[in-house]
Length: 195
Image (cartoon, rainbow, N blue to C red; front, side, top):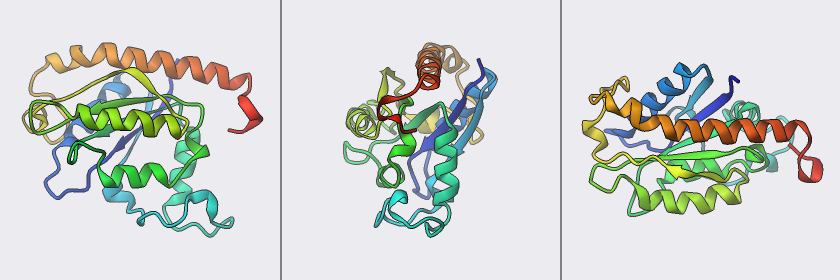
């Protein structure tokens, strides 16, 4: 069943490398027949959180909040692509996530983490699990760490080691399973009736 996914990328650094990993994941999901949008905080330029989207009067939220809210509501799942900043979540990613709440509900997330070193961003992934669950999009059991991300992909996301396609397949299978299951469950309704 084709699904609609958002890939949420978390860095705005000038020489960011994880964007290559995000592009790779977009390509892999599209190759499976899904519709995928990449949400990049460098392009969306959300302000530092003052008010959540829902706290603005109708029609008063600044650009691009309404557009992002519509993308989020239409998605069946969220692929979070996160680096690790001082063992934690990148601030641009946290800012993006915190601008919304009910828009995320009842859909799974999957964490693809990365680092320039050998650990692959797993410490940020552990923090993300708590945040994503609180936002109503709990993460699937598996994570997909990518160590030494700067050496793994070309700028367009083409893997330098073709084995990355095989290695990510099981992770994507699991993500699709959860997204499909929750999509079917949402058609029957959700707790306290809100989507």
